[in-house]
Length: 368
Ligand code: CA
Image 1 (cartoon, rainbow, N blue to C red):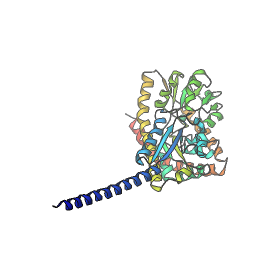
Image 2 (tube, rainbow, N blue to C red; image 1 turned 60 degrees about the horizontal axis):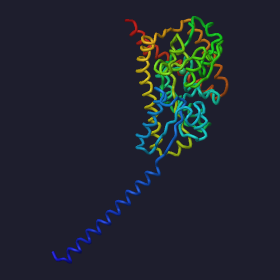
Image 3 (cartoon, rainbow, N blue to C red; image 1 turned 30 degrees about the vertical axis):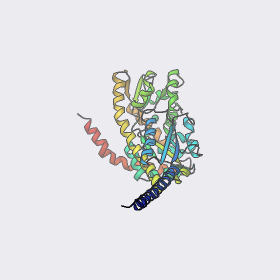
Image 4 (spheres, rainbow, N blue to C red; image 1 turned 90 degrees about the vertical axis):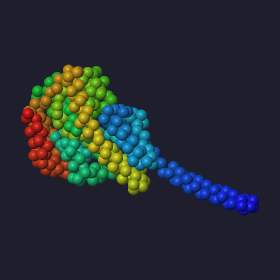
């Protein structure tokens, strides 16, 4: 090859190299800049102490799942109670856009919407399995969306505790009379029932329960179940642990999203967020089911907690009062009536099936 040809080839190769490098860099830069501009940073405020077992960690897992499922396009930072706003201020904070997501329970917002309580727990209402059936296939979710819409929020179920415990007491509850004068931390409709039975319901965020019970500011409390209650050390401040949680038979935890922020997401990210919520809803229930039975064993066998079943007569009377309270609550406004009608119709139908399926099976299994 002549020298002139060599120069020519080298020149062409070099030129081609430069051209291809330019093209590649340009393309990479474009992809990078469009991806960077698409990173959406969201804040999630919660009513739970940071990293609290089951509830706080459930919020963390949901945030992590959204980050991963969206391949980093949505990055959610979780704030524990009080870090950005107070535990019971999250509803307003997300409504006004201070944060994009809130993780709590709908009965905390009964002062804003009476109907909201039905999406967390109703005394003698639905179990976790029945609640999910109502929400996803029984019209519940559509009603929840309607209720939260006027606050500029998109709601979603983001966990379930399963049947909760009846609560911690320092005296035995042998009749409904024993509830008279009792100052008990119990939120939502359950609190209204206690009031009707002669007690004084108190609404306290989780973090304030133990000190209040220990100091005697409250006489009794419910919280969640063995796993969470033990984490708060409630067994160190009360002697008797009553079951079942008639007031919270399958409490749904929620994650609501600022509607404007949600609607601004491209459709695929909206679907990712909605499906991450579904996974979180299922996973929390599985975690509670596993950890509650381990914690109950520890409470009874290591900490000497006295486990007590509410007497049948107490349950019967609480059921009567609950039905009255819930029906009266439904009359407060049109929206609450609409939600109540749907919920009660669903419960009355589904309990016939539950009676011949879960209930009959569990009764049979317990015989041996
Ligand atoms: Ca509770």
